[in-house]
Length: 312
Image (cartoon, rainbow, N blue to C red; front, side, top):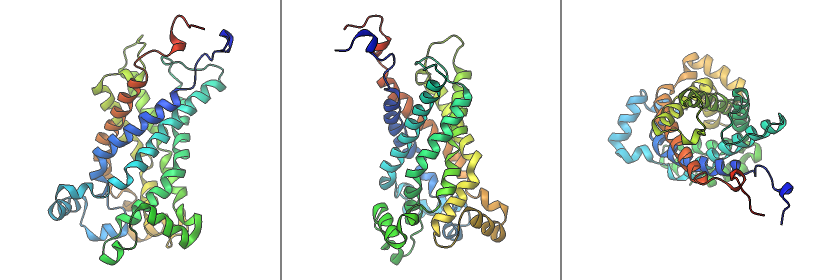
């Protein structure tokens, strides 16, 4: 049994709680936002097949009904939720580590400096890139399968990654890693925007933590954070999609950027931005609703280290 002075002042449970809350939030965000993913038309193949975003949307509804907008959602669901869990878990971990380096561990009601929030967000995005790069490579390859022959090329994400590995080794599975990291740096503005809005909407002197603010405030803060995040690094996402849709065509980020600009002009860097912004608000509002709801379950009862008396 521990002596009184051996009991940790603040057991490290926040990172684990944030991880699982992020997982739930990822599922919620995917369910709301998936229909917008297919109509972004970032790859050359999809762009040539449809006249624009709304034409793509209408044709999918006409040919495949509403269910067509959700085609392919099941296979990436666990991966997307896992990546979201890793983002939120890493973010919380980095926030805590920065507080420890400052010699001032945070509590539930402490607010970390916004600079720490921004750095932790970018760090979490960089960490998550290791998972999201091969996952999105498989997603892009599967989305680009159009003919019957192509449809038989990959039977699913795992089959796709396996065949890419046999074709070019581990490097082939991480095509577009540089542009993926650049895109995921958007989690810096993402968390910064969310935290800033939450602080502005929380009454002064309140002891509430952010997962206790009301639903409408979470929706506003989460939705706005999603829009700011995507706008901050959207061109990097376009380049990532181009590289991953044709892995053997480009030498890297700069080479792909040069080819895209020369062949299609600067507008290519913003192709698909409209449906992405339309998706960003509801999808990220749902993500943070799922996240905050789950965090409430973890904090419904004060942990032992916040109680007045501790039995030894």
